[in-house]
Image (cartoon, rainbow, N blue to C red; front, top):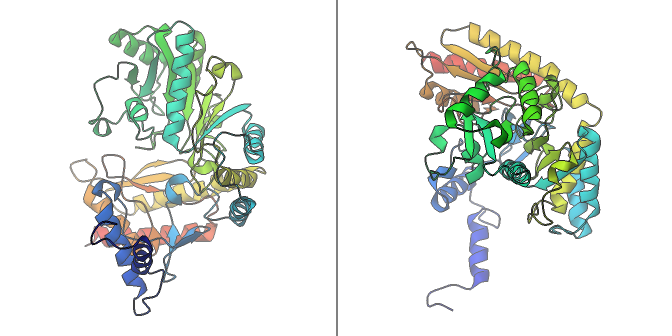
Length: 452
């Protein structure tokens, strides 16, 4: 043992005491929260810390609680994850049951729960094949791999991936090379010749595939060199929505040039926009559909859904394996969560409550100059404050989030639109009364911020 070091058991006991989990009866709950925040800031880089210092202790339905029992109406859904609400009984029970079975990990060895999940995904979505991962970025990377290796197998050495300005597909290397946010790509190497970004087909823009053809010509890329077109149906960074006719044009273009059409619905999937998937409202079916977040409602799972198994035939065994994609406990959560979407009621609720949210925010914006709703798609919306010079303001957005928290309404820190957009993402289980209450608190908080 190193001189001056303490036995491991002593260190563990001290850690438990410091965390408020063992003894220290004179210590208050607020001190526990202070310890959590101080310790995280001490042992994690500042780049991790973006949210308000609200220490989550538990979450249920559409509410988040701290250790004292104080609660907040949740307008975060854990970033578009808890679509079916926080901690549904069926999901909690499934996780407990799987853990008690005594199987916490199985790598890629076959398990019954994995078989049930991939079958359920096929039955629910109509995509016959799926590949399971843990994060949305992993699913994006896998889709790029599937598309580029397919193109290479067909003799396309360049295998270019077409993406869109303003896109966000994750924070890993390939996902950010595919992304279209320059501020997030500053750290990347200058090796993205295989990625071509084109203008996003915003709703109402009359975008057609000629825009894509022109961009390819300018870049000196043949259409036959394109492996896939990767797109969000609405962009998480700005809430810009794709023009439905553009989606159809993209489908026709990809069919004409034997390229895969990939829709990233990690954020928009599982009822968030008022349909099970946003692509359903376009009448266009992608070749690869990327899922995450709402697929489990809780634990880290993502998936690439494959419309035609020929898309993956060229891959060698082992090329899509990963350590935790088949995790039994996580997949137990997926299985139970998928069952909550089977009868369509959650999706119907999202459409109904989404209309209420859009109407409430429109009324909110009309009550005072400078307020703007930058997007509303089912149960996701964004607002910003526009300054007299026409730009969006960061400070008011930041103050609004803090003021809402003081009034029992929890929002994520401003993001998108260069950090000026306040994103609103309630669980789909939010009731009419609770949404009305949230809108009222939101309005009072905004008034307080603007009239300071």
